[in-house]
Amino acid sequence: MKSQIRGVVPPLAIPLKDGALDTASLERHINRMIDAGVHGLFVSGSSGEVAFSTDARRDQVLAEALRVVDGRVPVLAGVIDTETERVIEHIRRAEDSGATGVVATAPFYALGGEAEVERHFRLLAENTGLELWAYDIPVCVHTKLSPDLLLRLGRDGVLAGVKDSSGDDVSFRWLSLANEAAGHPLRLLTGHEVVVDGAYMSGADGSVPGLGNVDPHGYVRQWQAYERRDWEAVRAEQDRLAELMRIVQVKGVQGFGAGIGAFKTAMMLLGVFDTNEMPRPVAALEGDNVEWVASVLRGTGLLAG
Image (cartoon, rainbow, N blue to C red; front, top):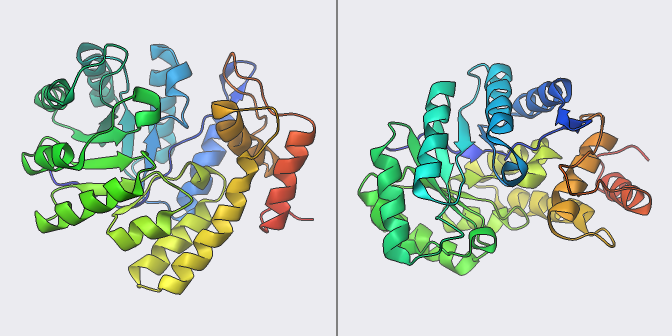
């Protein structure tokens, strides 16, 4: 199960209108990213509101995304849930949808140790023929996936790749070194969008940047520079993207409301989304916070002054 997925694979942000999926904005959004040259999409991840979605909403988002993509790029489907049996149910639906692969976290809520986490991933692999990717996001699931575990699962053909959103650059570097020494059994994608340049220097196979919803062109340019080993261009693009990431520095709002709220607000200001509506109970950004996002977009050249 050696994946061919590499490059820029943004985690799809979801446009809402009056509590429902805004399919017109979603189509505009996906086409914009594919036109920018992204190499795949990750549907129903953290940026895709998986934690706020019913099973019916997950199915709708994945079906609509696959309809719009129409085979132009591979699609990874998040199958994130608390425990093994629930994840397998999501995998079944992803298989029926036509997704390229599935992305799962460690189990959460009923916390265990590394032995349980390893068995979880092995059971998932036994129950699907799709590519299985591990999603390392300890801030949300309270378990850090160790390089030793991930490499073992990669060498055994359990995992095709890793989406690393741990923010642990030391661990990512060690994983990259071990992966290379083992013959590169895993595709490694970083979700740490402000230091993608460092991940590329470590040997990453690509990125899954939430900020890529706002500026897919920038991340594609950075990948292209990386492929030709133009490290100065890689760094310069990252510096601009780091400044763009300041859109999340809003006042009086934390967590998901600040991060994804800023992404949605930016896409509304750019004319990609019709609204910056957030899933309940999260409030949309408004007032001075909207103006802050607009000022950062203007400062980084994405919005006319």
